[in-house]
Amino acid sequence: MQNRTSTETGNEKGRAADSVVAALEAQIVSGKLENLAPLPAERDLMEQFGTSRTVIREAISKLSSLGLVETRPRFRPVVRKPDYATVLHACGNVVQHLLTDRKGIKNLYNSRVFVERALVRDAALGAKKEDIIELKAALEDNRRAIPDSQEFYRTDVAFHGVLYRIPRNPIFPAIHEGYTSWLSPQWDQMLRSPERNEVNYIAHKAILEAILERDPAAAEEALTNHLKAAWEFVRVTFDWGDE
Amino acid sequence: MQNRTSTETGNEKGRAADSVVAALEAQIVSGKLENLAPLPAERDLMEQFGTSRTVIREAISKLSSLGLVETRPRFRPVVRKPDYATVLHACGNVVQHLLTDRKGIKNLYNSRVFVERALVRDAALGAKKEDIIELKAALEDNRRAIPDSQEFYRTDVAFHGVLYRIPRNPIFPAIHEGYTSWLSPQWDQMLRSPERNEVNYIAHKAILEAILERDPAAAEEALTNHLKAAWEFVRVTFDWGDE
DNA sequence: ACATCTTGTTTGGTCATACCAAAAAGGTAA
DNA sequence: TTACCTTTTTGGTATGACCAAACAAGATGT
Image 1 (cartoon, each protein chain N blue to C red):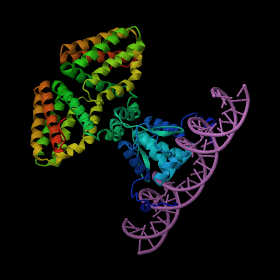
Image 2: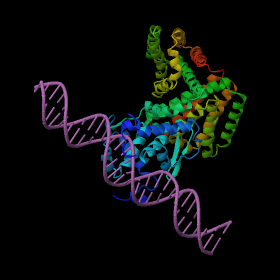
Image 3: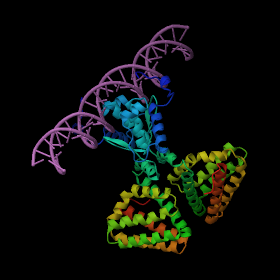
Image 4: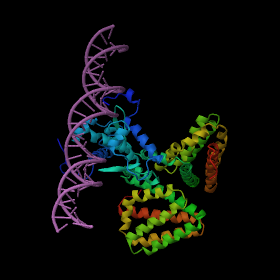
């Protein structure tokens, strides 16, 4: 193949790379390319698709940005079937740009409060036995970790994570991961303030008790107080003005 | 410049494209590259960064995937300051892969029900005068559009959109856009069923009335019935089994 | 026989050059 | 001014080459 015009390749308006992306995309979702399996080498792909390496590399780059493959220098790209975590990861990079100012952080945090308020309401109304057991266990872990800030942080996240699992909708745990990673710069401050551990544990305890009593309003209020207090602490720590 | 080793370029382990991405990213968020302004031509960028066009193109491709620039064949990439819609757009491509089966669609739809339930609760509890006015206007538009399915769809989306604006958190309208676009294949069926228009309008009316009466439980219930009925309609239309 | 060293191959990352087609810009004739 | 033609610009693609790290296999020393 020497020269190519838009008419002879059949790719009327689009870019050649896009059709390669589409083809590989289809092979991945259809399972023809198994999860975690390596993609063919670039030089094989260019033969397979009858195109140049330029196009292949651009296609792989796009797939990588879509989160469908993971690339490392000098390694074949590895297929990665998309899941909800992939979506969050794809968003992550862009989200960072929205958190440069306090307003962005506050918006994200408020959305978290919004979500968790509804979560604890639903938990109070409909948590199953297994959920209650999980919550109790998470709270107990949390209590034991009070002396160790590092460990307390972990169990804190885990406790909230149980709430996100109660709806049995995989979207929610993914959202939880997003919140914890995107807001981590703020929470890191909490890590260095061991005196907050006990307060936060008591808040968690209040939330669970309201859930146990099947009192959605109390659960929502306890959760709200908990998260508002955390925000207040972060606000003061970072010396942000009133808002 | 002839040959480059990892030591002489200073990019010890990374790929050259990544530093170009980072540099352009910084220029975009810092405002040095204004919004909607065209990026320099690829041939200028390669001079500016002292690298080959291959690297520049890969960098632009990455920026495009991040949603920071918009590319069209034969046009200079256009800078696009990231906003919440950008994030959703970045997610969108990946989300599609999660909606291939009914379970994925149901998960997404259920998350929407979850969000809107909480939205109407908050609306009932704290909607401001302006919000009420907007809701009434949206409902009136909705009523007038009953005979025209195309128009009804638009006003339907608009009515729900008002709910997403009430918290005055730009994240929510973005989420609304996500839901409407990602679930559009299902809603399109609704478009072709004009007999549903009146039912849906009545549901909207019930929601607004509950909000006017400041009754969060009634508002939540009306909203839930509305969305559950819509799902039921879609489920039957697509001839999906019970779930 | 085993661990270690050497060597050739594979593979992704980069560079350089060239050509095409469409868009934009500029110029010319009516 | 308007309509038509030419040149330049710009992104998309092809091709061929080279590098460095990873890999695989054989050679070597103990």
